[in-house]
Each structure stands twice: as structure tokens, then as C-alpha cells.
Image (cartoon, rainbow, N blue to C red; front, side):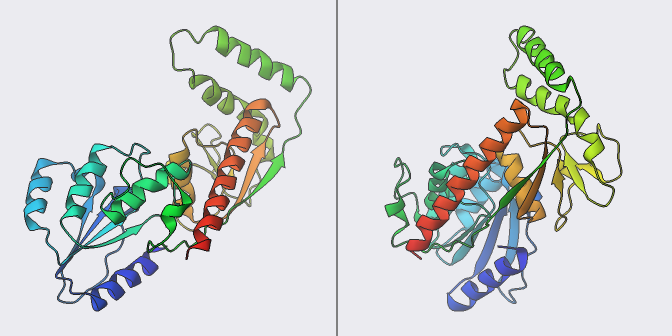
Length: 288
């Protein structure tokens, strides 16, 4: 949901329940605009603050049965035993009112959804992997984010494929003790040299870094909400890619591809993620 929809859900809940105070937990980059709830106080606590002693113990003393805790875009790691999640669950255990907002139902695959389900059910299925049967009887609303991918192919110059293979072989030979993920990241950036001529002045583009030095090419940390971008590079980490889609709100994705193996790898990874997302929406829709 967007900010306005989230505000409306909080307002509706407060009006229909005996709520004395509202606390919203959000990561800094997705902090929401808080609604005016009249006499009911509402405040927001940042993700990194959740584990701090200065916050943890006072909150445990404060939170009671008439608090509403709002968990907003809190799925930041797929580690279900993450310390921040554990602290948040302590807060949730002390109240009987909670709302969990999350733009996508998982980071990478359906097992991540169990983290959200833990937040909303006091971890009653702790230790269990995902099963679509767990969607039965729970108050879950899926506002599906249907995404589509279009590939804009580059016309490679003569010798480009050979140059790419030479670069790839050199990276493998020099990897040593470095993180092997360096290879796909460097190869991906390397292929950008053949994408520059495809950049059109009337469109906005996003890349991993500022190497293009063009006014209509920005980097992922600097994208603007509501702006649609053509992708020159993929984000290597799935969470960062999800953050980009969440932040911009775009559903139509065009990717500039050389057709070389590294581009094909990222495209196939994203397509597989899209398939998992659509499968989840289909399963969740049965039980709504």
C-alpha cells in the first residue's frame, strides 16, 4: 500500500478498537507519514533503534494491551532469527493489536513470508517452513504488484563477444581469495560500455554507479518516487532491487541487455523471482 492507504487503515483500526496509543516501526528509507489520530498519540521508531537498550526496555514497560503496533516495510533480511526481528516480536507479544504492511510478500522466495506471519501471529508457527495452508484463517490482504519485464537488445559491435570472454577469463584467473560475487558484478558493469549508445535523451535511466556521466542517468540510491526508469544495470542483491521497485512504484520494467551471458543471468534470475511472486499472489487470492 502507499502512504495514504496505510494512513487510512490505521485510522480505521483506531476508530473500531479501543486503542490508547500507536507505535509505527519503520526502516529509515521507508518511514511513513503519520496520520492525525486526534487524542490518540502516534509515533514512529526506526528499524535500527529497535535493538537499542535505550529503546528496548522502556518500550517493554510501556506497551500494553491497548497499544496498536504497526510493522511497516520491516522485511530487511531473510534471517528469521535476526536480532531486530526478535526484539520486535517481544514488543508484539505484549499487545493484541498489530498491523503489518509490506510491499512484497517476500524478499527472494516464499519462506521469507513466514517472518511477516510471525509478526502477525505471535510466532505461533515458529520453526515451520512456508505452507500455503498457513494462509487459511489469517487476516491477509494482498494488493498484488503485477510487474512486467521488457528487454531492449543492444546491437553489439564486431569483436564485443570475444572482448567479453577475455574479460571474464581474466577475472576468473585473478580471483584468488576474493569474494566470487565480484566476478558477476564486475562483468555486469563492464558490459555497460556497449549500452551507452542506446541511451535516449527523452528517457530516464538507472545504473549501479555514475560511470555514464549523463544528466538522465542516475544511480539506484538517488531514484525518485513515482519516476519510471529504464535499467542499464541490475542490482546484485535482491533486497536492493525490491527497494528500487518499492521506492519508484513502477510496474513496467525495461532492461537494456547486450545478450551476453551476464545479462542473461540477471534477466533469468529476475524472471524466476517474478514467477514466484505471481504464484504466491495466486495462492493467497484463494484464501482472501
